[in-house]
Length: 551
Image (tube, rainbow, N blue to C red; front, side):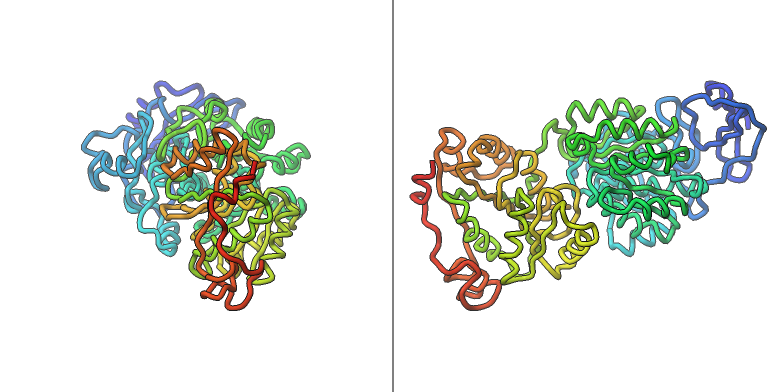
């Protein structure tokens, strides 16, 4: 009690520090509103009330841990979910869970000053048994770098900025701290959600909810996904039944808020996933309107692939003293994944894409997942119909019904239909394992979209291949593409350099597995069996002279 009184010396009025007799932990009590919290309060509150009981102690499923006890932090960071201290001695940095400095260097992880050391193992994180059961079932040997480094501050109640490429495991990086906070607070979900996750696209939002169900369902972590293109009534009914987490696209949630159909008065944990992409898509006004409805004192986690000034400004406005976790380098602009081999094929006429397309696919083992990008919905459907004459192939774009989109993605993930033709709707945020090759059938409108597209392969440490077709009409992108290739240590052909420098062209091609004609069914054991292929027969494409008259 003496310790609790001392801890309350610099608390804002009318908060007091009190010791919970059951757990021995210090909690905070607002003498006017009767509110209690395990977190050190950030601001004063209002009206009068009467004294009340201590808050419910931390989840009983959690084992005792060093961050579940001890003196609380000072004003530099909010008191964490388990009453943790963020003060670590040099011995603690290398004790128990391994050499932290070596781990940081090996995984190219940079932490801002004052961040606690990462949890190098699941045992170090001391997660509740119910959550550990799901993690073991998933077969994860240890936390990914972004998980290990962001869990440590987030579980302590700190705000976090995570800068990492997609496919790094960041979804679980923010879901686990959210689950722990929900378990600790034990609020009634019928009074409104307590965790808000914002994502730029409905595909990413539904993917996050899938992970939420996978890892949190056995712990009672109910959730709903709110996105455009689906009936509002069913989404709203689920919210009103009571859910802890709402995973949303900003536009759809803003519609509900403006109609007065959803309230965020219980939200205490906010996640902005792919914040840079949300700003690119023009969601900043909606994000600001949403955040204006969230009560003060919330904890905020922000994840982004890049760190431009627009994202930095957003973090400075909606976060307090965040711990910044960077995997790799914090670039203002996107950089290509170095685990992806980038092939650029210059063609003299758009119709030649088909021959090169099947040649590139035939370099892969059968049933390899291939994601093909087109720039228009019309071309997407047209190419899908052509490919479907020989093999199982699906298409996804913005005009597809949500149920159809989910079916298509499910078949692609499972391998039942290993080739998927898509517009850029699938270019960001989808975490589909083992995509062996991405093909840019048409060059994207912006080089940033190029990086998003090829980022669908080479994920989570795996290697991937990205093939890009370029015509004379794509010449304006050549210089930027050359810079991307060089930044990621890729080969740049003399022909592409000439295109970038002088507007000239050059030749390129791809090997094929099938032999004979450039088709799935070529005579040499191609992917689709024997016989004449989908696009007819023919020899390998000509060399540099093919592009002599290109410009």
